[in-house]
Amino acid sequence: MHLSALNLRLQQLEKNIVKVIQLLGEYEEELIDEDDPLKKSKFRRRIEDLKKKQIEYENELIELQSQSSNEQEPQFQAIAKQLKGIDNKIDLLLDGQSSLSQALLFHFNSVEQLLVQPFIQSLGDSDLIQIQASLETINTKQPSDEEAQIMLTETKQLLTELKSRGLSLPVSNKDMDEIINYPTLDTKHSLKLTIPIIPFILTYEGELGAGAGIKLKETWQRLNKIKIF
Image 1: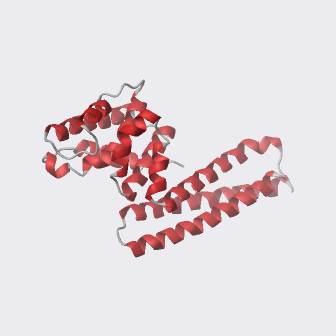
Image 2: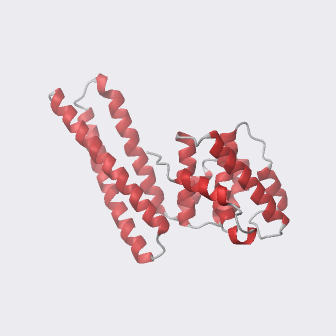
Image 3: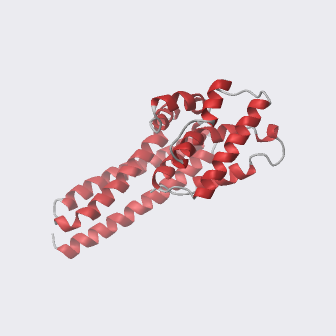
């Protein structure tokens, strides 16, 4: 294939992939915000259609790659990475809570899994999707040091407050102390361990008093608006 024709097809493929990423983000937000099972099913069907598009674009990429030069390999690798990201996100959205829970645990070592698993198991699909997106965001585009520190400080303070009031928690006091004081090497690692706990804490806003958790909620919402693709 002539180089100019190949580049034209590559450009169009990249535009099509961007459209899929945008639509997937919109459908993900609808799934998170929607409680009606029928409407959820509608958006799942639309996501299944995007899965077909993703497979179609993967096949096209393979075809174009067979006709390209070595100089274009970095561009093909970047597109392949985007398609893989789409594939992973679609699988998470379609597989349901069980698969989401398992996917989240892969972000942690065996000791950490024992600590965060009770929180993960107590949450619904929408919270799990947000946690997954946040963990992926931290792995690829870290929040600012200031935002990370706000989230860590607020979370630890609110966890301590919950424990002091004797409110029901999915872990023992001993495990809670270990989460709050878990020895980590850096802020990023500590924040990752804290992320699965944040949606649980925010469900107690009313019982913690006026203004409690406002900074944490605002930072959490900003983090969830960062796109991971």
